[in-house]
Length: 239
Image (tube, rainbow, N blue to C red; front, side):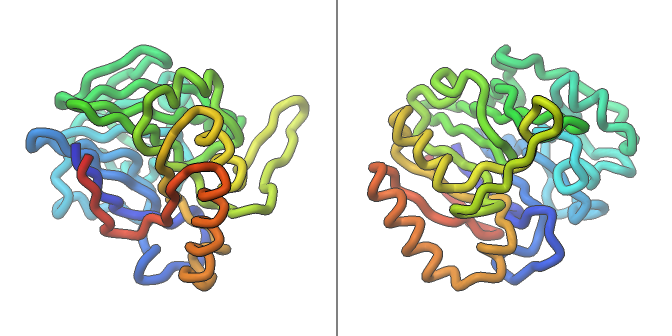
């Protein structure tokens, strides 16, 4: 399984050469390419990507509004995402049931509900192909059924909205927003995940000194036995 980080910028105004496009990941296996998320930055830019399918984590603009004028391939999402995705004219729609492994172009996606937003409920995906398994969750407060989501995962790819500062708010009894990277690394430690990659980068990462931030994150990871790095647009990995 091959990974390419098409974009790593969260829903912020700032952008740099390394964090220019809205967060998206291309997962490739045996010549099939599946794109996870397609934010507004990607509107009209499918010509150079050629995805065989698109999978959505949730319906926020920086994750789904690149499909506002339609999609060049089938689009897969949870029922709650389809219910909240009213601004996009997508004809070839497919349902991914939560906690039900679904094979798309030879790659298995299992959606786990996460807390993040009331208006755009989100999922994270356990993505498996061959002997490789990752968990991809660019926006979250916490993962429901975390132990099952992260069991035997080789890489956790998580939310970089904030490094240590809490970005969580309460709406009634519901928590919304983003858990800091520090908290997510603690989850990796508890569930035995050896590596973490940070994407969906917020202003702290995008406008900060990346060398200093990387050193800080590596120290945080070392305390928890987790190898950690910041993703950047165009970064590639092979598992």
